[in-house]
Image (cartoon, rainbow, N blue to C red; front, top):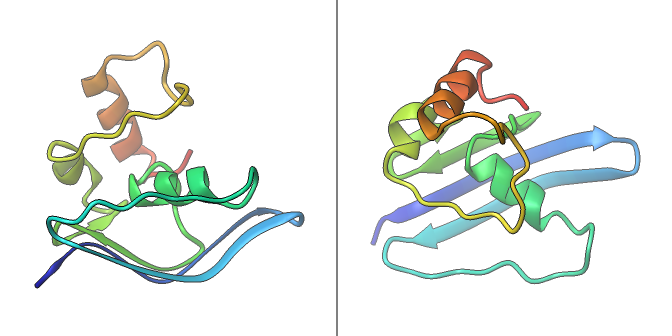
Length: 108
């Protein structure tokens, strides 16, 4: 069975107080996964990395046979993501947000 999501050696560190280091994750196609953990443990950051909203410092993120954030516009057309709160591009349409994300190379 192939994977819908694959993270290999993903690292991200926005500050000295928080980092994700050497994260590996496989989500097989057709599976349903959830993230559980305390506040500040990296659940939302991991989702933002998977969605191409943040660029990892190291490692690769593969979603539906494409790479994030490099293939974000093509992949986001096939993905649904509903965050608890809107975090980014609140005044833009979906099309405008995808185009802005593509122009910035996936960096927030």
